[in-house]
View (tube, rainbow, N blue to C red):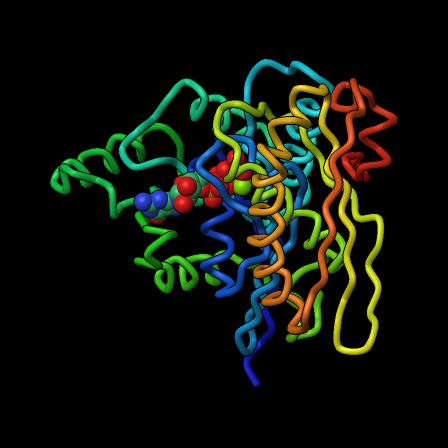
Length: 298
Ligand SMILES: Nc1nc2c(ncn2[C@@H]2O[C@H](COP(=O)(O)OP(=O)(O)OP(=O)(O)O)[C@@H](O)[C@H]2O)c(=O)[nH]1
Ligand SMILES: [Mg+2]
């Protein structure tokens, strides 16, 4: 048997560059929610990929953003920066040929951590000027001694095998941390709450800011069916009305979409009940955040 390799690999970048999409496609299974809106991911989420002697433990992180703002934003930045400290390798993701001030700040943060950094140019399927890619890569090489620069399309799965091979060469020789069939460290309860949050983010346009959180009140198996009740917390009465929609239509749609994903995840029939409750100020209240799982260990 060849020597075991294993390492922790943080996926970082500014919001919306495709970090969670990349994780899901690397794993071939959806464990981290995604949406067109920035700041979709709020927690650190592990995704474990084991192929024979190589185990890669990916850590998806919230997009690093400026402006500390509310407690929840600070908690998200802390989660992302904490992850960078704890890993063997950092994957920094950027969007096509863009290099913004916010990318520069992400680079400053990972540089400070002193870990090897592999730069991923994502969304190559949407690059119109293909011949601009090589000069862009050359310019990026000047910015930092990246371990490698790999263009991919996370969404279409382009070049992901080459990326995985590159990652494997950068991992230390070490025993595996997880059994080969384990794919995440998160509980089914957590994943179910995240599914509801994804449908909320996708259903609501700019009307609803990020002031929503989901709490699972019940998760109970009865025969072949799992009964789930989820509470959606919003900040204001007006937001509650928006989530519920006319005659409850929007909440019904969110529930129908969430149930499909939950049944796929759990492999059983799901009876889902959704509730919406106003709890003002939770997103800027450290204690409320802690009870919603936003407190990071370190
Ligand atoms: N065309 C294209 N779209 C992509 C690709 N990767 C991600 N996207 C889209 O980009 C949007 C953001 O993707 P996410 O994976 O949620 O991005 P993220 O970096 O995790 O975002 P935050 O968690 O908010 O920081 C979604 O609409 C994805 O479908 C890609 O390779 N090509
Ligand atoms: Mg994400």
